[in-house]
Image (spheres, helix red, strand yellow):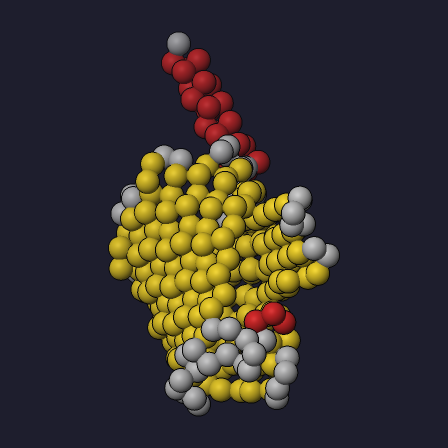
Length: 240
């Protein structure tokens, strides 16, 4: 009987080791987001949006690679076109504090710029970490190089403040709020503010539905362009 117990124990441990070897710990994830709206009748309008966020983590390092595109046509005329891509690297100092570096390229002709390069770095802190709530802030400085559509290229140093709050409403629903402030050190009146409110509902282990409202405000936009852009979207999220 003792021999049988020893054999069973060894077999169980060996099986566990083999299973762990066959299923290594996953240190990356990928989230794709798709949105589509087609209206016909008195008004013909089509909106197509897609974005992707790849996240890789190892030890104290985290790499994030975001990218996305948005295109809208109304009665055969393009009324919105936006593209962006970037990277962000985070290094954890401890459980709550981290350093970061980020870069983003963006093109949005309908907002007044053909190309924008945004590079910044700084420090972040997670102030709240519970099962239902998280809250973090980032503070840093950077540099923006912006080629405008109807005027010259502008470059300036910026200060950046960012905050994100997330709340788990239930086992399958989450709310999040992002806010970002950019201060132009070269021209103080040219400050910018970006925000997004989002509600996400889990459909399956890999699919979620997201409803979001985004706002971009620029106090001194290029001539003939407005200060505020908003975007309301319903998107399907695919998690890998």
